[in-house]
Length: 466
Image 1 (spheres, helix red, strand yellow):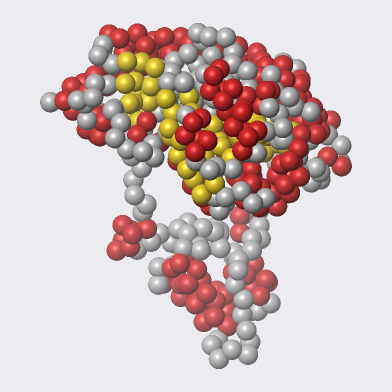
Image 2 (spheres, rainbow, N blue to C red; image 1 turned 90 degrees about the vertical axis):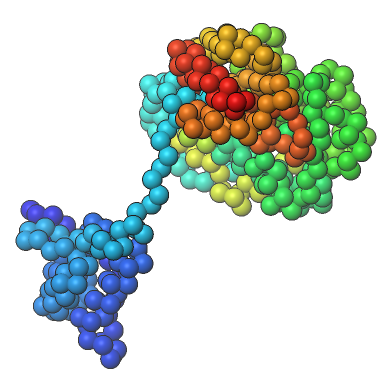
C-alpha cells in the first residue's frame, strides 16, 4: 500500500453555482493557501482520487487542477507519491526564512535556570505509569478546579512539614506554575475592589506587567539589606503586596525578623493581603531554613510555590495556599482560566510526593548546587577579587557587586560578545541609578565550566574598563 492510499483532509470546497469552473476554484484556493502560508513548503495534500472523493467531483477535474498548479511551481507531483507543496521560489526564499537563531552561550550564567538535565526521568515515568494505571474513569473528567484531592492533601502535609505552612487541603489550589498563580490572585483582588498592589524593587518585571493587565496600579517599594522597606509600604496606600521573603529575587536578601513583625502588623492594620512567592526556599546551604511567612498569618497571606526550580519548568505545576477571603474568588478565576490543571500530572506528582521522591531529589540537588556555588565563589575570588558576592546562602544564583566606576552596560556588551549569558539587577529595577550588580546563576554549569566562564568574564570586565 503506497502513501497515497491513506486519506488526508484538506480545507477546499467547490460551488457548482459559481461562475468559475470547479477546477479553477480548486486552483485558486490552493494558490491562496500556499501564498499565505496556511500550506507550508513540503506539506502533503490529498491525492487526486482522495480529493475528488471528498468533493464529490470527477477525478479528471482534480488531475487537471493539480497539473496547472505544478506547472506554476506550487505543487510537486511524483508517480506513486502524495502531492506536496513545492519549495518557495528563490526570489521569496529570503522572506520565507526566519532570522537565524543566535548561537547558544559558551558559558550560561543566567539566573533562575535549574539544571533540567538532572530531572528524575525514571522516577517521574514510574509516577506517570502508576497514575494512569490507577486513575478511575471519573478522574479523567474535569473535576474540582482546585485540583486533585490526593495532591492537595499531599501538598498540605509536605508544605506544613518543610515550610511551616498552615495548609488545610481545602485551601490548596493547584495551578499551572507560579505565573498562573500570580495572575489568578491579581485578577481576584481586582474583582474584589483592590486598586493598588505593591512590589519589591527590584522584582520580576513580568509579574508587574501581569498585575497591570489585571487592572491594578503597581507601586514599587525599595528593598535593602533587611528586605522590603515596610515603612515605605505603609505610606504607599497599597491593598496588597507581592514579596519573596525567604530569598528575595533578585538580590538574595532574607526578610529580617524585625521586618517580618512590621509587615504582619501592616497587613492587619491596613486590612491588606500579602502574596508570598516562596522563591528558592528549597535550596539553602549556609543557614537554617526560614519558615514561610504564611505560617505566621494564614488569614492574611496567600502562599505560592511551584516545581519549576525543583524539578523542571516544563511540568507547569504550582500551587496556592489561600486565605479564606480569597479562596472562592481565586477558584472561580481558575475555573474560567482552564477548568483545572492536567489531572494526570497531578496524580503523578501526588504519588511522586507521597513516595518521598521529591525529598530525595532535593537532597541530591542541594549537594550538587552547593558544589557549583562554591566553585563560583572561589572563581570570583580568584579572578575578580574586587567584587563583592552576596545572596549566596540559598537559591540558584549569586549577586555580584562591582566597583561603582564600572559601566554595567559595557560589561554586558563585552560578555555578550564572548557568548557569556548573565543577568543584571538593573533589568529588574523600577528606580534607576544603582551601582553595577551582576546576577550569575550557577545551576546549569559544571564546576570546570564555571571556572572557565569566570575567567572569560574577567576578560570581559577588563575590556569594558579599558
